[in-house]
Image (tube, rainbow, N blue to C red; front, side, top):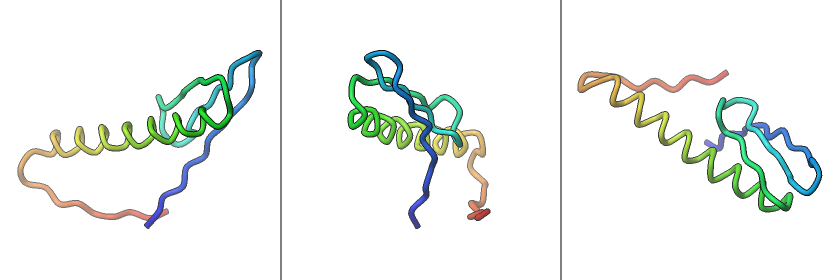
Length: 70
């Protein structure tokens, strides 16, 4: 299953700025639009993995994972 996220991007002076709507804290800036898209993807992957590991650590040793689709 491939998840999709929404990037909000804009150019401000010589910089491209971007945020991922669905994940607070995932925001980047780059000199080119292409670099911004790549950096947002890398940062999003890292944030999701960090959040996953944080959730598993908080759950301890006895937990169950459930998929939720909206």
